[in-house]
Image 1 (tube, rainbow, N blue to C red):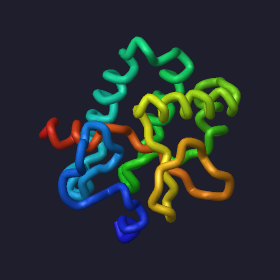
Image 2: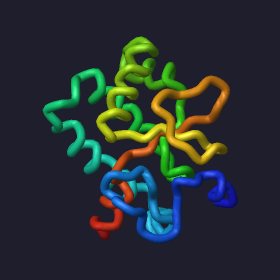
Image 3: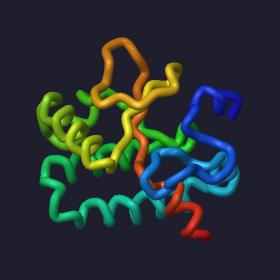
Image 4: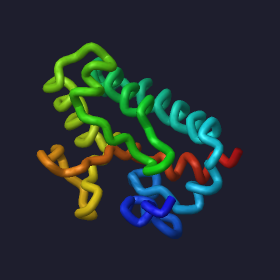
Length: 144
């Protein structure tokens, strides 16, 4: 985990307004080293989001793909939108619109790896990561 410093959204201490944040505490990297335990929390988080009345079917499918590709090493999902599109049988542009919708709804954060900032839309040539908003809060509250 020497790359941990590259992932600026993995922080020491409890983030402010953690339930509305994409930040995750660094202690969860060790605490959830067993990926099965982390996956359980990711899917619990997904089910809460998928049940929202304001989330459309396309966004729900795209969110499934994002959760399926979530990585423990970075506490993010960082695949190309075209990859998510292939996973769920959609056009890349539809995936981009769905992700933008979820960013506006504060379900996902899109962040740039080396620039320490959130973006509303992915930028060409820059490594983006999708963060699950409130996952850190869920991990802290969830215990085992």
